Length: 290
Ligand code: HEM
Image 1 (tube, rainbow, N blue to C red):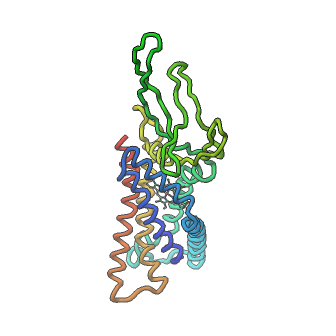
Image 2: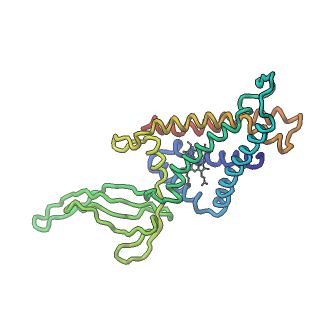
Image 3: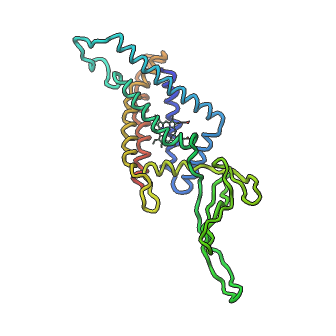
């Protein structure tokens, strides 16, 4: 319990630092930074091992926690005649199994919305940047120089450059594809049929749209407010779960000393408030900045 709990606490810190980029960096620079980070998280071998350790830790932590809760209940099937639980235990400590189950449900819905789309279904679109360029053309009959606007879609590649993917033909108004996309991200030159690069997936836009960022004044997720409320409430639950869990993990591992107990309790309580609060601020900020 304690070991998996402490590992998940470390996961939360890393996950928070990565996700804070969603609100600390803006515009194309922010989108790029987050998508590069998501790509790195999915391709670095060390991070991959850590990710599998996280999944196993979540499952082990939930299973052992529920098992212990059932055992405790069995050991004391009837409430004591004189039961005043508030006198020697906190509300959080008595409801760890319920709090943990709510967090598990949150993690399942959370992973279905982001992780599953990015890693399993691979439905996250490519990171594409639309640009209008003005081209000058000389009329061969009159010699007059004319300007025309061409809309070009550039795809961000893992080499860090933007490659032209398609453009709108100003004469026919039709989209002309310059690349073939294979396996979702592999970019092939349409004429030469050779691979010219790999594109990033646009997980940033998926997250932004999920929490209600609008495109051309149109809200992209009509349930965005409910999504934000779900995240804020879940982070409140996480706060209570960590409040008790942090200190109790140190105690279970025997890492307690009379001299440092006060400090450990203070750090645990500060962590329990700061980390969930920072997580909760992310969807709220995205929603308010629509
Ligand atoms: C505002 C808060 C959060 C945002 C915006 C967010 C965003 C994301 C995104 C975009 C992914 C997919 C990353 C990828 O597949 O590369 C992800 C994965 C994940 N998230 Fe969150 N997350 C938030 C809070 C949380 C919290 C509080 C928890 C745990 C209690 C959590 C647990 C996870 C887990 C376990 C994964 C899978 C990690 C992996 O595959 O390495 N997330 N999150």
